[in-house]
Image (cartoon, rainbow, N blue to C red; front, top):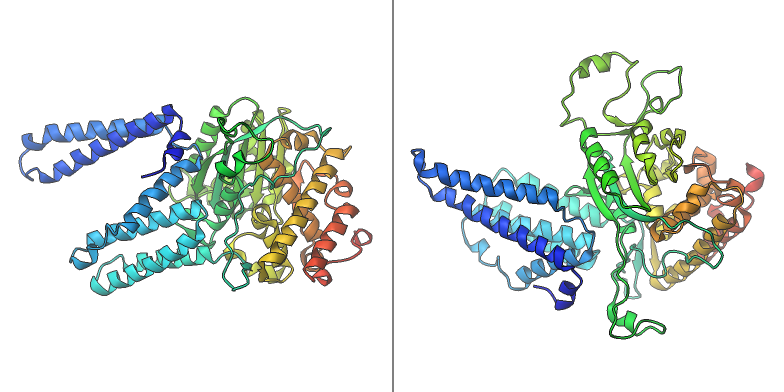
Length: 537
């Protein structure tokens, strides 16, 4: 099913965990299928068999709780990709369409949906597009042959995935006008290197909670486009071991390059408050020493319902949590009395207990500024990166295709092109601009580490490659919006942070502004930006 090299990358203990899980899963399926063959009358015939089946499912559930396979290692995804590819190449489902059994066709459609998710997570967009075409044909055949109730649902699945893969606002084109598949994972040259003499912390990003609860945003399965983009930003580009070994200065051929870890990630789509808090507590409990917990919130804003005499951590609202599965007594009373706080909401104060350990928060919401009112109670490193709360009208129409703020954190060049009014670009120019953007990131890193007034929390997080890249992209985003004519004229609403960054040394630094104008000149869009911004503040 997979190459020996992929298996070698999986530690023996983890391999045993997978083997034990597969055994329990197969056993549970065998016993469950056996229940179908038992007579549907009497009790003694099936009672003992039912008990054995229940016991195995209980063991399986406990095993899943004890051994969460959340390593964030792409080797497991590659295993799944190899498995699904083998099914496709060997045409395992080729005979299904010849049989008059809709349940078999549904099984085939589910296979396609799962394969597409795996390919999306591996950024194999060329394969995704092929699979979507095949899925479209299969759904059309299915709806033509069978008059079933789930026809609308499968057509919706097709619409969702089609919108998902077309969500990027800018196309990068080869000379023959084919679309270039770009990767937004962390590459070797992605994060600016730490220069000699830079004094930064030694913290490492270990866990990340990626939470999506935006209404009307493009999604596929339980993954919104914002969640997907942040997920990609927290993944390393898989190493090509062969090319690594041939690089000058690398280890002897008998040694493997050092294994680079991805942070563990929980993906939570429209969680209730209790679900979100449960996962937060689990991550907090399991966080290793000298590690960071990242919380990414892409959610609808919840605003305070009435005026408050105080300005505490529950007085500014927050972001929405799902109320559908939370049954809370007194909800009707709560809605009548505006003096109570919104309960289906993650308030800044709800995160205070977790600031006992290093915490890095990103809030992309119409009420992100609620988290500007944080208080660092325990003296641990704490940073909040906050999106604008409003965008110019010309950009609001694109909100279904994902947030501009998150796009800047995931793919800053694409975001820059989008706000500059460009929708396509040749590959050669794209690569030239990427090179220049890397230079900008290096200079932003120097601005941060040389600043005399910056809060030490930023520098504590700057030793981690993922967080370093997010911080430099955040500053680039904020500086770009501050120089953009439409943002200045319409909203004057820019990204903010807690603690506040020294503006004259970072987001309004003349050296950085010069770089942004130079990038705009390369793209011939300098007229979109203000030349002299400092005089306008």
